[in-house]
View 1 (tube, rainbow over the protein chains, first blue to last red):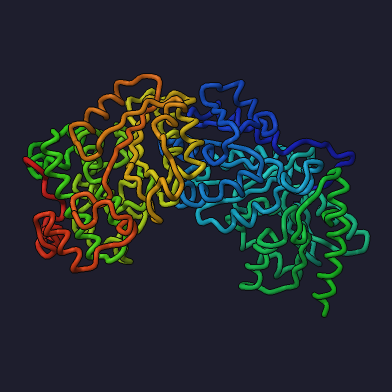
View 2 (view 1 turned 45 degrees about the vertical axis):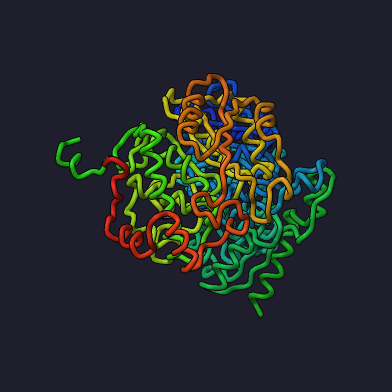
Length: 321
Length: 310
C-alpha cells in the first residue's frame, strides 16, 4: 500500500491512543485491570480510572511491586495493563520481568511511556532508549512500538488478545498521525506503507513518519524507496524483512533507540542469516540523551528524515559496489 | 468423587483442606525431612538447611491449612500458595509430592536434565508451581496481586506466601509490604522462615533486620510470632490470621536451620550445600531411616505414602 502524508499533518500523542483503548478494553472485558505508578495522567490511565475505579490500582512510586502485583493479578486470570515511564518499566523492573513475568510467561501488558530522545526537557534519565534491547533479550516477551495515535490504540487492543507479556512503547510528545482507523494492523506483522524498488526503509515509532518524509525526498532524487512500518519488533516479521531485502537489495533501519540491540540489530540479525545485503542504521549512537526541545534533539541526535536520506545514500552506494 | 477413585486415592492427596492434627502433621513432617535429605543426597546439589527448617510449618500449610486439589492445580476453588524464597525447592517439591501433585520418584531427579524439578521453582516445568521464583523479594508482590484479584472476584480464596528472613533485605520486599497494608489485604498471610541465618552468616551480622515484628506492624500488618517447629502453635497462628480482619498477617516463624539433623542445626554452612553421601547417611540415621531404604520408598511408592493414619 502507499500511504500519503496529508499536510498539515494532525498531531496526537501515542500514549493517548493507549489510554483511550484501555477504556474500550475495560468495557469489553471485566478482567481487564489497570495499574499505575503515580503517573495516571502522564500515562493516560486516568480515563480508565474514572470509568472503572474498582479495577484501577494506584501503586505509588514503587514500580518493582507494580510489575509483580500485575503478575499476581494475571495468575488469577486478570488481564493487567500497567504503566510508568519506560526508564522504570524496562530498566528498574528488569529482574521482575525476567523471572516472574517472562519465565512464568504471565499475561501482563506493559505500557512504557516517555520513550526516546523526543521526551525532551527532562533529559537523559527520563529518555528511555534501551527498552528494545532489553525486551528483545527476554524469552516469551513481545515488543510493539506504535507509530501514532491510532496505531497505539490498535496495538493496545492487540496486546490484550496476545497471550503472554507484551511491552508497548510510547513517546511523550504529540507526533504526526500517519494512519487512520482503517489502516491494517496485525500483531507480529510489518506493514508496507510506501512501495519502492531501490531500497527499503524499515522504521518503527515516530521514525515511520520520518521515513515517509525521507521517501518523498528520495523520490525527488529519482530513488524509489520502500517504507516498512515494523511496529512489532518481537516477534519479528522475518519473512517480510527478507522479502524486502531480496526485492530492493539494501536496507536502512530507523528507530528512536540506542543502536545496540534495537530494531536495526534485529533486522541485521535476520539478514545476516538469511539474505545479506547492505544495512545502514539510523539510531542513537551509543550515548545518553540530554535536555532540550524535542525537535532540536531529534535533529542533534540524527533522527530526522534527512538523516535517513543520507543513510539511504550510503546503502545505495554499498549496493552498487 | 466415586468410591473406586476414593479407594485408590491416598488420604494425603484429597481435594480440599485436610485440616490434619498436630500429631498427624508431625509424622508427615518427618517423612518430608527424609525426602529432603534423600533427594539432596541423590542430586549432590541444592540447599539443605532452610528446607529442613521449613519442614514443620510447611507441612502444616500443605496438610492442614491450604485448600487445594493436587490433581487439578488450577482448580478455581483453590487457595494460592507461593514460595518467594525459591531456593528452598527441596522442601517445596517434597511437600508437593507428598500431597500428590506428582510422583515421589520425581524427587530423585531434582536438578537433573531429565527431571522437572528445577533448581528453583519453574512454572514452565512443574505442574502446580503457579509462578516461577528464585530471585528474592518478588513473591510477596505476587501475593498482593493474587489477593487483589481474589477480592475483585469476591472469592473466599486465601493467599499464602512463604518468605525467608534474608530476602527482607531486598527493597522490593518492602514495596510489597507497604502495598499489602495499604490495600488492607486480610486474605493474605505471609509466613517467614525466621532462622536468622543467610549465606554469609547470621542475618543480624550481615544486615540487621530486627525488630521485624515492629516493622511489619508499622506497615499496617498483623503479626504473630511463633516457634516454627511447634505445630500446635503454627495452627493457632493460621487460625489467628484467618480471624484478623482488615490487615494482612505475617507469621514470624522462628526456626532452626537444618532442624532434625543435629550436626546441621543452626550451622550457616548448611544453607547452600547438599550432604555428601556419607553425610546423607548420617542425616538419615538421625531421621530413623537409611538412604537406600528411603530412596527405595520414593522409587516404589510413586504417588506418595498416604501419610500418617492413611
